[in-house]
Image (cartoon, rainbow, N blue to C red; front, top):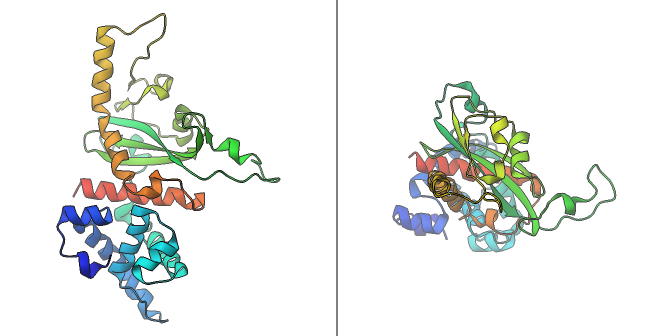
Length: 283
């Protein structure tokens, strides 16, 4: 898969191949162009791949999540070169203000008038951590084990503006942490006039933010009435945008398959893919 071979494809076809639209790809190339020129002026050996092909290599790695050896072979470079390209692209994209999320401060500042925001958590599987005999958390396996998924996971919470369908902020935690505990850990304090919609995993959020709406849970002694069911259905239909965002994000198999890399860069890659979604949606 080379830029020369796929640049004539339509937007939809290009997106099926790389995971992003052609217009988004060209925008990312423009953001990296100045860094690329400075890198070439610094000297050193001439790179085997152009800037467009290096960006395609990174998108292919995120999209298919093969090994660096497999990804590098597709583009005619070694495993080490593929790894270095991936690091360079990711480190330079994270410094671009265009790819920054609004952040949690915008939720409380009042400058951005969010009418309704939705909270939700997704779990991404990881490899079973190794046991350690040192450090603050020796039993990493227990720390990352999710009882819901019955495997070791990393949890990512996202906050979405339901009107613009834009991701506002994210927060990462281990698989053992409860959804509501992640909310308290993230300190995503919302303006009092902004309404929060969340699922039943956020029981107790009304004590922190009174303007909150959650589906009512059924119990053995208190079954749901017809009005409760209709209200739960309305809340679910309003929050379906969050599930659609997760569907887009997990097209990149690096977030849906078992994560094999070091966990310290997982949040960086998750935020970059979320920023790409924001750009594509608001384009």
